[in-house]
Image: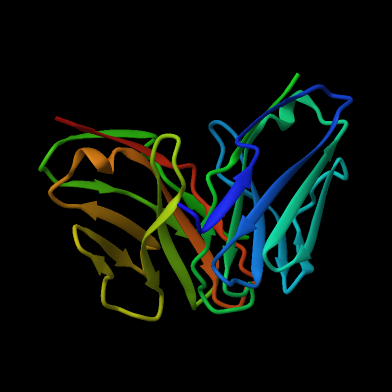
Length: 115
Length: 115
């Protein structure tokens, strides 16, 4: 499973901490995505990047700050999170985000616990 | 706004038998794409099958097939000859054809295949 990788796989942080999640795709894709998967809720799209440019911000609180330095890497910087932000954070990639019906390929996720 | 509903939170099936997972969606779009994704326990989410709304023929991938009823806005997944490795959470997802890669997911159905 080397297509889309995410680190760390597990993260515990306090509400005053600052941490970052990293995603890397080895598929030659140009679009990358962050999703939040909470228990008992559908996956929620957070951000979309296409050719390093952010094309979608799904009303995500500013305590989540994405960064896409190139088409292969995507970061999610976290600061002053709340316990309700505890979830599985999934990264995905696709050829482009503007393509028609593009399949998205997912990473294994980072399990985040905010204390 | 588009919505996706999976009304069966949990299902079980005996190995080698057939099971059908249901999915309904709501949209005013005429052209779109539908997906079924599989998320095994502690493993990456992977695409199972994909359907283009303008194609009347139901998609098939080996033991997996869909029953796409456009007028009824229904997109069920049939798994034939169920195997233990099919145990996973299954997500139905919708994407507009003109969208920025925005996938809208259902709540998921947990499928347990019993030996």
